[in-house]
Length: 387
Ligand code: GAL
Image (cartoon, rainbow, N blue to C red):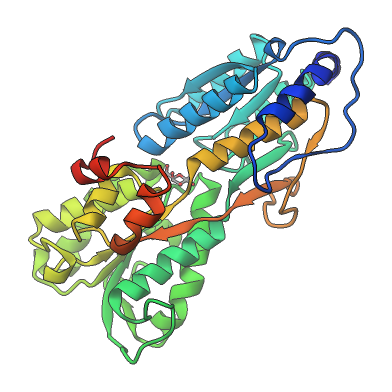
């Protein structure tokens, strides 16, 4: 702990200024506590932040990596950004290297949230504060802060949009007279990602009363998270499972299938491909089941615009990156970032102080207001389904 802290405290005065200059507005996780400057004042460029991201196969993580890097650089930090190709040993090695190369703060979006205890022990011994990014790192005391979205609410919102798309709820979320029954299938994320469990719990708490009432029927009977899970959130794995479900329970494509709970846009696109290949669609009005999603990836936003995918959950990665930068600045100035949740994110060893951001459901009708007017995408990008 000692080695880094002395350097961090030396840099505190300089960074306090940088933090004031760059802190982005609006109720963020600012710093609390007293900075303890000492020794020679250093410049912020003396401080290196290691940023470990899981993969470049998904557009959202590239956007996260870019936003975190540019935010940190604007605040005057050196940045060591690495992507791990969804490979656990690669991510472990990258973090080991960040530590040996002298990182002062780490920001980590884990692949397997349970696989980094050894690396984080080394970080703690070197006095390096660790910020878990989007995904909680589990089974270690050596994670100091967590920036994320309200993950339980993501699941609630996914399930709510499924119910609205089916007509069980109206646009305001009130129950209609429609009692179905509607036939649905359920998909979950990667079980080694803590978030997958939050999404699932939020969704199932919302759907279960309708399953119990018989309004929703899970055609395959696969209602446990283990049965619904998708390792590494893989689009191909999801497509295969959907193909198998269609073969086994929907007469190869002629069976009635009204909706699919999907926790992530990549999974949604795998599901939609399987449905299209089996003859469902082309649009929701013409036989495509209601499919949910998450992340507002451009290819899925285009599908929503074309009435093929029903919804996604928009997580503004610009805001998440901003919170990570603010937290890094707090640690780098010898402070503690401000949490807005100190109860929900128990990582198996301790409750990790967290900063949660809110999410927004996107359907065809609000692509313009939520995604285009906010500058997240241009109308042309939505039109062509590419960045
Ligand atoms: C989760 C994340 C989701 C989605 C998913 C697949 O951890 O919270 O937003 O990106 O991973 O990458």
